[in-house]
Image (cartoon, rainbow, N blue to C red; front, side, top):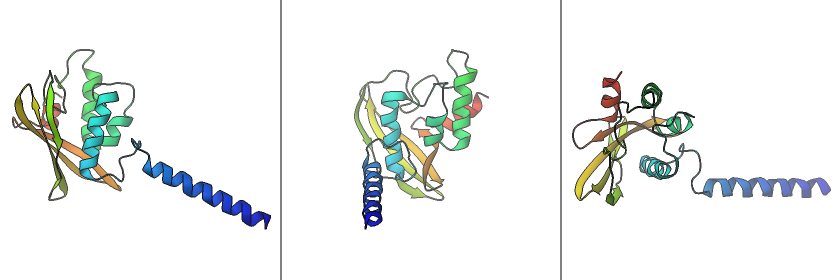
Length: 162
């Protein structure tokens, strides 16, 4: 009887802790998020502790980006020597200065082997669209490239600076 009660208490605690973890906002993992939710999570993360330009830990880069893109971002942050590297502005808005209004993350559009998530916004009154290309990675999604409305892409910018 005593063992049964103890077992029930332990099972109840495990169930409660797993439910609270799954429901926790701002969870550290992006594994089970939809492509759109990964993009939303990246913009939220960018406000508090951006994965771009920092040199302390690759954890944030690896959470959001495929290995090739994370490697290029990490290399750019380290090779710039405190100066401007390949990225000379905010890669989420493709701009050096930002005054963002009418920001919206749209539903993903499925393509061959990837999903494209458009983000629209106005920066200093000018309309822009940035497209995030995500690919399946394990149980979730990771960003393989960001395509800007001027025709450039994050991958091209970083590769050209090697």
